[in-house]
Image 1 (cartoon, rainbow, N blue to C red):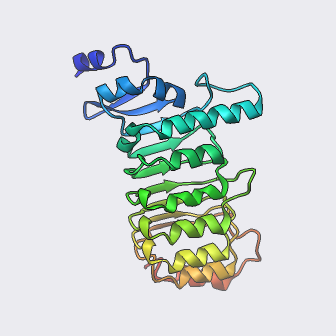
Image 2 (cartoon, rainbow, N blue to C red):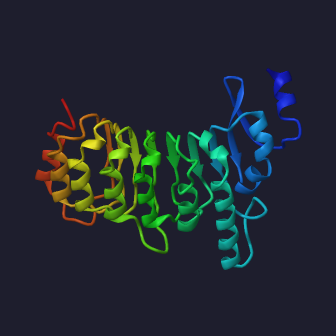
Image 3 (cartoon, helix red, strand yellow):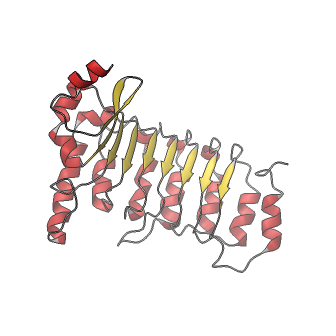
Length: 255
């Protein structure tokens, strides 16, 4: 395999992780992905991609803010047009792209095989609702924690769009930490039959009252849930022991 590895990576100065003997995982700035796209397609299509930067030089940016935003968006649009996105099954946005970049990438007609999407602390805002689209019906793992932006946090609207989407019925892991979800969003989740496969749910740092806790305790939809994180989600409201007891005694927490 070492022999093949040297031949495959000739001329490619990229951090490529091999799995099962094949190049599969890339940690790469958007600019470099586009630069090496043709070579990567000849080598082997990347299945897992961690986009580390959208800056023109591939690293940090120290120029004008408006110019930076324009460059980031153009890179995202070029990336979204690449057919190689049709091979991606695992994507992490680690470059704080913001709403416009997120929308450009998630609008790609080629991005249809994703099983895992992670974009945390990335200033996406309400645009997270785009994930509810039919193109993301293969998603199993979704992490949108800390998606606040200058346009606001996703709050209930973005959350409800996702948890009620008929296209996300395969979702097993979902983290929506610190996004200002309230009782309306929690009630929609608790009643959504499409979340029946959900095994792990992260709602830490949201705004859930005792009414939201009671909605969860009455849920007949979250039948597969095994992990629930509500830490720091009720500090805005007066504690309600009865609501907590009802939740702990509900079918969500079998004895």
